[in-house]
Length: 200
Image 1 (spheres, rainbow, N blue to C red):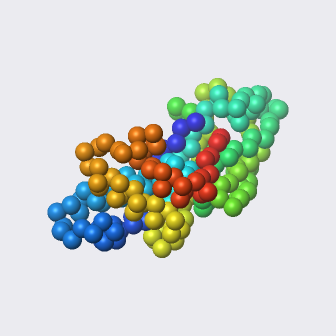
Image 2 (cartoon, rainbow, N blue to C red):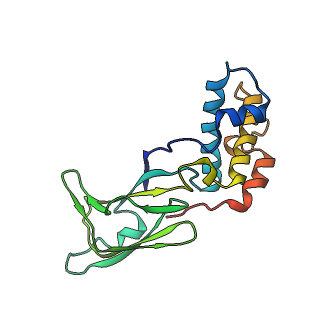
Image 3 (cartoon, rainbow, N blue to C red):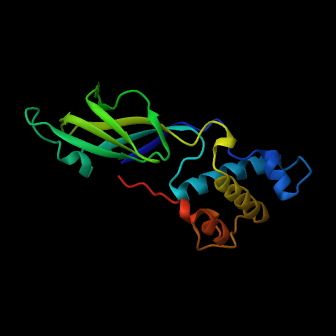
């Protein structure tokens, strides 16, 4: 499985001014630093929870060795159905049709359906047959929305808390080395009920 970010979020769930107020920073000389910390904190929250906060577009590529596709390495005369759990969370929609791609060509798949759950989605591919040189490529959009107000408050609060942690430890040494990506105990407790790690 390979995931590639095609279109990043158009903004962040927390503005620089909002973060400055939270940090009680009045001067402007650290604005660029704070902006970078907001992005770092948002990525940490997304990684920890398995959720995408702002609207973004990703490309999922599955090679023929993936268990969901290995059963489809068969004759075109004996086609099978493959079901793929899309990692985008919350899922919005597909961007175009799924494709079979090789080094020299690509083919759109039009016999499929998408089942949207509360957050993630299942992609059902009907009559699929591929050979060992082909991969499945799916582009999809995910996230809570384009504006910060659409992102649930808990995530935004967690980002502010992480920005404060990172700002106070700008030398790169976290006071919580056992937690991944600067997720301290308070933030972990806040986000734990919201974790929804995707498995394909």
